[in-house]
Length: 113
Length: 112
Picture (cartoon, rainbow over the protein chains, first blue to last red):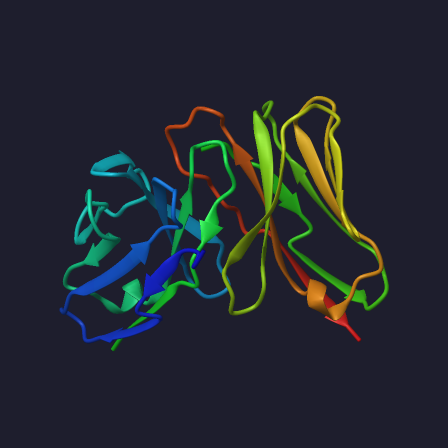
C-alpha cells in the first residue's frame, strides 16, 4: 500500500502563473482533504471532497482556488494567478470514511517567486 | 469544526523527562484524535478516543479522554529524541460533513 501520494514534492511558480497540486488517496479511501500550512503555523483546513463532490469548502479562499476529485484520477488543487502569499506547504489527506483518522501525504511545498 | 485549546504551546524537556500536553473544550466532544508532526514532515495519525474516561496506551504514550468528554491529554514517559515534533489534538464533531480543524498544537523540544 503506497499511502497517500502527492506530487510534485516541490513546486516553484512565478507570480501570476497557475499551480496544480495532485493527490492520489490511499487505496480504498474515498474521502480527500486538503490543508495548507505556513511556516511555524498550524494546519489550515481548505476543502473536503468525495468522488465528484465537494462536501465542505469552508476553508477555501473564494477566489483563485479550486479543487476537484474526479471519478477517475487524482484529486487536484488548483491555484490560479499565484501570489507570494500562496507560498506554503499543501498537504492532502485521505480516509475511508468520516469517522476515521486521516492519512496524510508528504505534501507539496509551493514557492512563489 | 469544533475548537479546543491546547497547552502548552511550547515545551522544552531534557531527554528522559516526562511530557504532557492538554486539550480543553468548552463543549462536549464526540471524539478526539491525536496527531504528531515531525519537523519538516507531515502529520501522522496516532489515535482516536471515543468513550468517556477512555485511557489508551501506545508504548511510552498514554492518551486519556475526560469523563465529561471535554478534555484530553497525551503523556509521554521518559522522552527520547525521536519524540521531537508537534502534537495536535483534533476534535471530531461526529457530524461527518466537515473536515477536521487543527490548532497550533504543542511543540515538544528535547534537549539531550
